[in-house]
Amino acid sequence: MSRILVVHGSPRGDRSTSRRLAEGFLSAWQARHPEGQITRREVGRVLVPPVNEAFVAAAFYPEPDARPLSMQADLALSDQLVGELFEHDLLLISTPMYNFSVPSGLKAWVDQIVRLGLTFDHTLDNGVAQYTPLLQGKKALIVTSRGGFGFGPGGALEALNHADPWLRTALGFVGINDVSVVAAEGEESAERTFAVSVAEAEQRLLDLARVF
Ligand SMILES: Cc1cc2nc3c(=O)[nH]c(=O)nc-3n(C[C@H](O)[C@H](O)[C@H](O)COP(=O)(O)O)c2cc1C
Image (tube, rainbow, N blue to C red; front, side, top):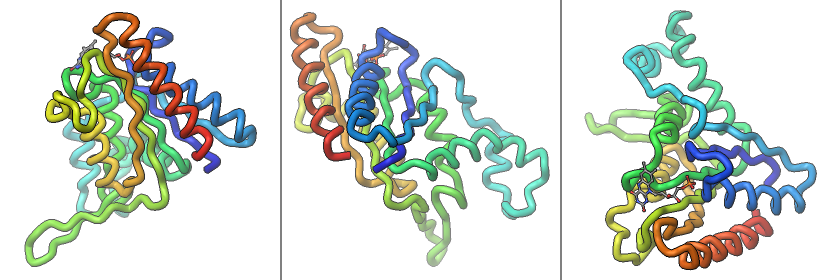
């Protein structure tokens, strides 16, 4: 594993727990892989445009090889973001849980990289849509922080978690199925309770930095 694409989703900078945890993982990983390449794509503090009508028209144009120049321009950022995905081996996404899902910047990024003909294909089988993922051999690590407790597997609030499970679904759709999730929970609980959860997440990330 030599190239990591980091997608930071929190609108917060230094105060962001998910960002800090992800950067901790990267420091540990870089120490073991001095030659390793890390590319950061900011989507929490820098606006990634939501898809609009021009994007949809261009992305689903029936003859992709004959797209007018104006449509190519409408897809330029998306092409760049997709290119970044292809160029890296591990995708590291850091994100808070926002209203049971992810911040809008990260959602916008996902909408930009799920691209017909580039990251997935669509065919009809007896009139029924079939989808084929086009990314291969990549892994993902999702580092997330939540204000509440119990959103993880088996937790009391698991069914309300549309953040990392949704990211898993979207990544699987484009072919990234090897996905690990590390979560810190309880920022809105007592300081000590949150600190324990963060420490556990830090340890888990140090362990993962040894195997990625
Ligand atoms: C707009 C907003 C929505 C939030 N929604 C949730 C939520 O649905 N569930 C939850 O557990 N915490 C929620 N939180 C709390 C954050 O998930 C928590 O503070 C997290 O640690 C922030 O991550 P960060 O420090 O990386 O930005 C929300 C916070 C904000 C600002």
